[in-house]
Structures are given as structure tokens and as C-alpha cells.
Amino acid sequence: MRRLASAKSQRWQGVGDLLSRMKRSRSQSEGTVPVEKSREEIDSINIQEEWPTLQLKSSKTKFTPGDLLVTDSGRLMLAISKHHFVRFPPVHVFFQEFTWLIKIKIPYPKDKSVRKMPPPEGYDKNKAIALANLLLGKRLPYYYCACHEVHWMNYICFGRTHTNPLQYKCPLARPLDEVKVFDKNFFLKDGVGNQIVVSTLQSIKLDENGLPIIEEEQEQNQRKLKKSPTERLAKFLSQKSRTCSRGNGCFGSFRNDEP
Image (cartoon, rainbow, N blue to C red; front, side, top):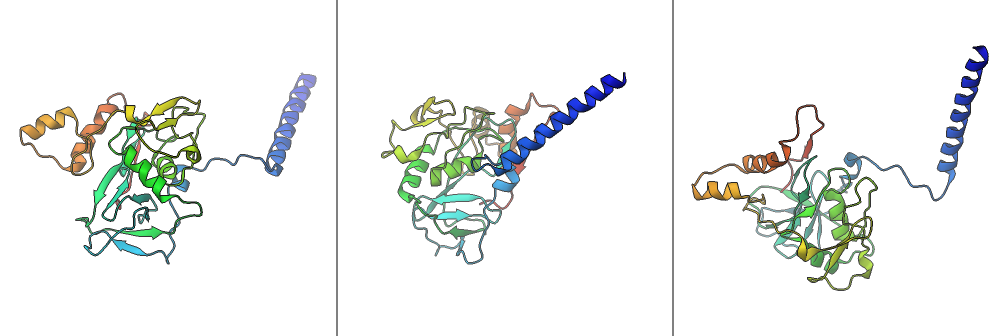
């Protein structure tokens, strides 16, 4: 028995030593892949006080097409014309399968402000605007942790590719350096190289609040039944949540400072 216990102790000690060596080797290696940060850490951009503030409600506010706009919570938006910008919806849930771009016109009725972020080196505003316009009105694949709105905006604005071994279907793996024209033949690529032609993605219709219009809501509109934007979004999301039960890990995120 003593020999068996001693053998077990030596074996576990050997495993511990091996793990320690692997950890030290990994930290010293120049080619180490860093541990992925949580969504809370990568969702936000560090806003600088010197960045200009733009009041969306003011009729005097004008964009320069390609302006990078940042909300108070650090979320990125893109100006696609002097009077329009695009963003993703502020609400997403764990079981959601697609997201969408929303086109918003200024002056905006709500009293909201954004910061104008200086463009990083190599930023191609024309390419960002062209891609954003191409994706408007389409259902864009969405996976809560592996392919969310931050990845989409980084890809649209900066051409930053994204792959995740946990979700190879995320279509943000194609480098945009090779793209010269954004037309009906433009395609995305997922993590295993499959091509997704944007023109073949399912279309989506939005109401005046940027929320999806579903058949049930269209019938309700015909009956002149009115619901608040929050209620309509809850109805839309409930279609996906019927399989989720309490304690099942179904959760979402919400930021109330979004335009």
C-alpha cells in the first residue's frame, strides 16, 4: 500500500512539474497566443477626453462619411453619410442566431451624444462604408460569445478577421486586403474556408425603431395594435427562447446608452 501511495504521489508530482514547465515555456515563447479576453474586456473602447463630442439631436451636427463614432459605453458605430450612421442593436441574447445593422438618421430625436474617434493607421473609410452598405438589410450570423457585434464592427471598419474554434461558422475569416470591389458577388468566408455570398443571405425588414418585423407583428399592425419597442423586441426574441428554461444558462446583454 505504501509503495502504491508513493507511486501515485510521484506520478502526480511529475504531472505538476510538466504543467509548470509548459506554462513557463508558453510565457517565454514569442509566438504565444494570448488568452482570449472576456466580452466585458473587449466590448469597450477606451474613450479619450480630447475626442470631439457630437450631439446627435442637434441639427447642426454633420458627419464626414467614414467617421468612427463611439458611445458612452465604448461601442463602435460608423457614419456612412453626412446624416446617417450604422450600428448593431443594443440587445442580444445567448440563443440568438443572427443580428443586423441599423441605419439611423440625424438629427436624432433622443438627446444622445457620441465621441468621434481618430481613425487608426491604415483605416480605409471607403472600404468600410461600402461593406456596411452591402450588409444593411441582411441577417448576419451571430453567436453570443464566438461571433458577436464587436467582431462584426471590427471587421467592417478595420478589416480585422476573426475565427473561433468553438464556432467555425462565423463568417469573418476572409482578409479584406484582397477585396477591391464590394458588389453582389462579394462573399465572406467562415473558419473552414466556406464562402458565403452576401447577396444570398436572408433579408430582414426593420421597423422605425430598428427592430425586426415578423409576420405576427405585421398582422398586429393591420389590426392597429400598438406595442412599445421593448415589447416588440421581447416578442421577437421569445421565438428563440421557447426551448430555454430557468437555470439553463440563457442570458443576454443590454446597454441603455445606445442611440
